[in-house]
Image (cartoon, rainbow, N blue to C red; front, side):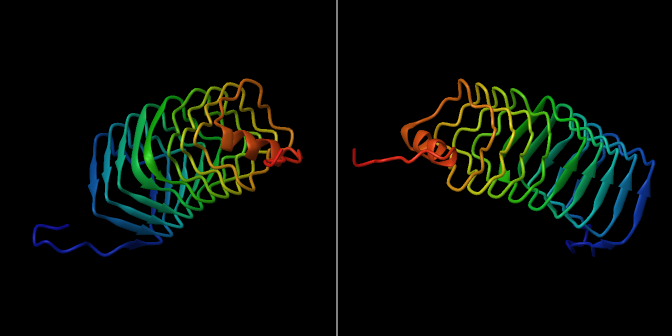
Amino acid sequence: MDPAGHTPAAEVGSRVVDEDWYGTELADRSWQGCTFVDVDLTEALVRSCRFQECTFERVRFNAATVEQSSFAACTFTACSFFDATLDGCRWDGGVFVACSWKPVTVRGGSWWGVSLVDADLREQTLSGLRLVEADLSGADLRDVDLRGADLTGADLRRARLEGADLRGCRLSAADLEDAGVRGVRLDVVGAVALAGSLGAVVDTDA
């Protein structure tokens, strides 16, 4: 908000190129249909901001803290989230291409329908996330903590899940064709869902 307590109007269709926003604090601001190219947001604080149908190319979120912000239907290409903290954010409908994630801290939030095809998320903590209908095909999820996550209808074809913790995870209608599941940690409900997704006929009355 501005000093008078008013919420600034959304920026629409603007293009931000090669800007140094290192350590900048962005709060209560909105962007719609904007493009960000080679912007440095290292150690920035992004709080309660809204981005709708924006494009991010080679943007550096390294060590940034992003809190209670929304990135609806945004596209991220070759962006870096190294050591970033993503706290309670919505990334619904987002597309991530060739982005760098490790390590990243994710605290809750909604990632409904995101595309993370072939993403390398090894050993990260994604517990409690809403990943309904997310495209995680080919993603490397080895040793990832997905406890309590909602993967209903998610595409996990060819994903590597070896050693992942899926206890309390919702897997209804998830596609796990050709997924690597050796050593996956499951509870009873998850085991039944996994077996069913792999084509097994589960007789719970036996």
